[in-house]
Length: 108
Image (tube, rainbow, N blue to C red):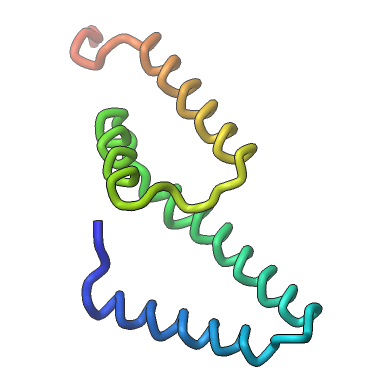
């Protein structure tokens, strides 16, 4: 679970630029609040789009991903309500999967 050197360089550069902007905005709480809101929107956009779309569909693969997350520094901030809702959806889907017959037992 790591970025390529090129990706890490791009990310580092962009984070430095955002940090410089925050420093420029010091003493301007309304402008800093705008920056924070836009960063939060980016976080939500990544979380609800590419991240969720990339989650494994298989429970054992999801478990492996979660173990890797724990080893690499933990979960990024996700509000508890959203995380709780996400976990409830996973449990609901798992329960639904257990009630369906296995594909190889179906008769045509």
